[in-house]
Image (cartoon, rainbow, N blue to C red):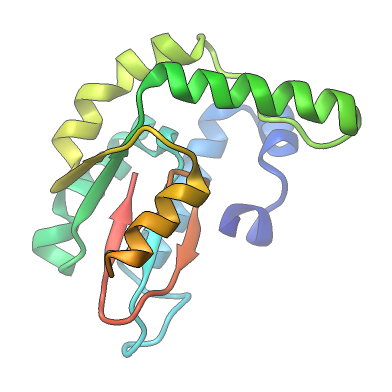
Length: 171
């Protein structure tokens, strides 16, 4: 969401500039939010919800690994089984094609979701301070954590969420 607010649609951006340039810009935004605190004031607590691809950039991995010790900002990995992720992606794709064929689409990855996940899984583990294993959809995740007074969100590109007295980075 933040990327799209500040730079533009991810699908259009990757189509024009490619994935490498997108990942550079994605990292710069994470750095601006986490290190420079450009989009919040000192009294405001943030939850930064990164897209799963944030770990494709070495600098972002270093920043995420250091975020707890340097910035008091723990990283939480919301782990959903890959078959559920694929199920949701296919469902969204079919729904968008039927409802609105011209609607923005997810940018294409270099590999299928299962292979991308395999490549990233170890990096997610290395970067995260906490891990939540989930097996349900976003609304149920948010409701479950909200009801238990735990701040959480699923992975989505660069969303900022505010929750009293909590700083987290979710990947």
